[in-house]
Image (cartoon, rainbow, N blue to C red; front, side):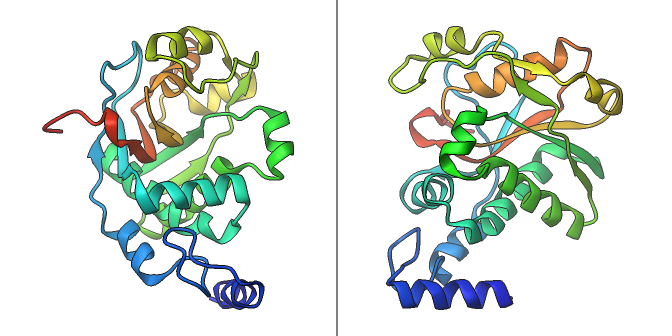
Length: 231
């Protein structure tokens, strides 16, 4: 609470505004916070789904305020947004888990150069917040930074679904020390946004190629144009 009050005070002094809608004085206004908390998780299969993608669940469509919140946290380092975005991710994880009361969250890895450029690892930050939210609901959630970048793929912007899949093939590998702890455990691969699903599918491949089945994937948001009808 103190951190939230301090963040709001700093935003007000520096002329900041809500990262979602721009209302002045707060990092996240009540309206945008409520928008995040009211979203109902849904199955977010891309169309077409890439081979090897475990069932994906999203907390919200990726558009309007949600998009602004994700970008503000990721690219503008507005750290207080990690907690509400993590809570949204936790709702998607809970829906993906079903009856399981424990889970390992495996974040999609970022390139070290990208993390240095941004000054933080946004997905790791959101994942930690999600794990705390899950534990508050009685779910034994732990973070497993089990994947690493074996090679850096080309920029994905503007690539078709097929080219994204080819671009990411073999990009991730399993850190060997995680092979035993993750064996026979409920695994959810997490990311902030799903578009074509190629990144998540590659993460699933890296785990399953080492004998670690993936229960599902969970994201904060799914790109609207990729949402299947009737899902």
